Amino acid sequence: MPRHPTPLPPSLEYPVFTATEAVRHGVTRDRLNASDLIAIARGLYGQRDELHTEVDILSAYCRADPEVFAHGLSAARYWGLPLPQNLQTALAPAKPSTYPLDRPPMTKSASPTNALPAEISDAAPPPDRRLHLAAPDRRRTSNALVRWGEHRREDEDIVAIGDLRLTTHTRTLVDLAAVLRRDLLVQIGDHLVRRPRYWAEKRRSPYATLGQLRDLASASSGRGARTLREAVELMRVGSDSPAETRLRLALVRAGLPEPLANVRAYEGTMDLGEPDLHWPQWRVALEHEGPGHLDRRQLAKDIRRGDLRRDHGWIEVRTTAGDLRDGCWEAVCRVAVALRRQGWRGEVHQISQG
Image (tube, rainbow, N blue to C red):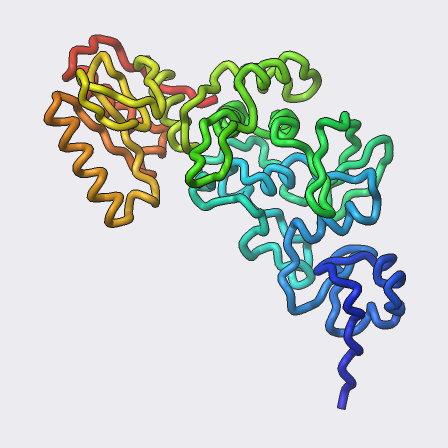
């Protein structure tokens, strides 16, 4: 009858640990080869029956070398930045049994409402979905798990959270400009500058201001710098979701007037709420129905709000995920019809996506 491996020392509390850490805590090299452990990468181990998250692995590398930090897509996933669904998780290496990254990601702040459908990804060419780590002035060999970069960063570009070191929200945006197309950068920038809802997020300040992002873009050079500068000029305060940003960009590119985003609307002294997008001079509002609007109480609230707006001469256009396909063309057409009914006389033209 096979013997069960001896328990690991309680002091070795990390879900993922290096061989050096294990030996330091009294674990022998033979014990690392026991059946209850897996080699996640060379010199990196974890319990076979546990889910090893991206943060667990990134943290192990950071503990092993104080110069190492996460950046790029790994930092974006940790911060919960709005990425397409196909980039919300890291890519498992060739032997997925050794690293269950095909399960949901670990990020502490990522939310399904932040994710964009994979079919509308703005990534071209497809970004490298491995874990993104970097160390200054030191060349390292990438493997099936980690893509190593050589990056020199100023101290203010790096933050430490527990064992993990990673680039700040704004530095991460700058780095992503090298691998993501303009529209997706605009969505991330809108997320960074949006006004937070304290009741839901327990913060009062945005992650950045438009002025700060413009300064970063102006100082940026190298790969992605031009794309970043173009993206920053399209960013706006007000979008509460990537879908709202996509809709705004599509509407303006089609020749429609630029809407206000999540600004309170009034008809005289009557408060009509905060439409996702609206055109007060034409009395048209657009509300994008995300997953939260399926809640019974929210649905009842939405219906009452729509009735109030119609009673005061407004047209309310309601969009869903299906309206985001084909460059949001269906939404563009519906909003254009509503605006024309209210007196707008502009022209609509086909959209080219950025």
